[in-house]
Amino acid sequence: MAPSTTISEDASSTEVKSAGDLVGNTPGAQSEKPLDELFLVAKGVAGLGGYLNMGIDLAFHSSTHEPALYNLEITGLWGRTTTMHLRKGAQQKGKCIASCTFYKFSPDTDLEIQEGSSTMTRVGHNDHYWVAEGINFTWKYTPQVPGKQSTFVDSDWKLTNRDSGEVHAVYVANPGNSKHRGQVQFRRSLGLDWEKAVLLTLGAVVERVRQKQARRGSILVGMMAY
Figure (cartoon, rainbow, N blue to C red):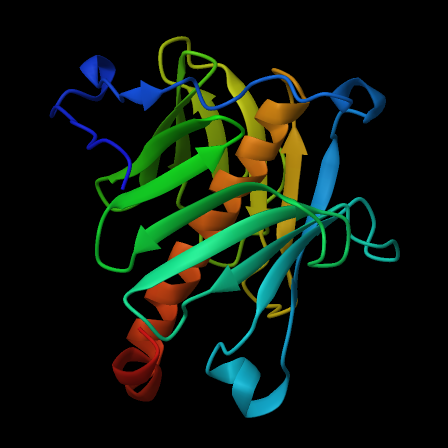
């Protein structure tokens, strides 16, 4: 596991230890276009297998009609831990460019990005703290008014710089659709490798929330899968 993360009660004084600064420059990365807006789509087994979350993966698309730019392979849904591998392209045959592992009832998610490792930690019920490029980030959840549609302006999740308050990305969830999970919008990029770290951490947050909801909604799933 990655080094433990110490969280003080005062979020402004929180220190998250990172080994090697998560993100580095990848050879050839300059040929890739910066990310803007992406759709997060679930793909996997339909029917009972899909309901019990056997083999459901996630993918990021620039358009729902185009092949995926990145896919997140999810394994270990029936065990104590869940592992997610981020790969470029629509298939699971490419080289893993980032990964994470979390224990279902632990607040920590171990991250492996390029040559660095770190820990993303849940603080309270929903906020997730992590570090990249020497900057403290938070995936922060904003409760929505029941019946109101979330938008990029009034999003469900914001990726913020904990020190400056600047918003780097936002995510709008689509809870009523089991396939089209939501959309992420980048507002300021710190580089392509950083963007991949954002996709990985967002995928982990979304999957953690889904598993938590599944445990609450199904005794069978709660006993068998989680």
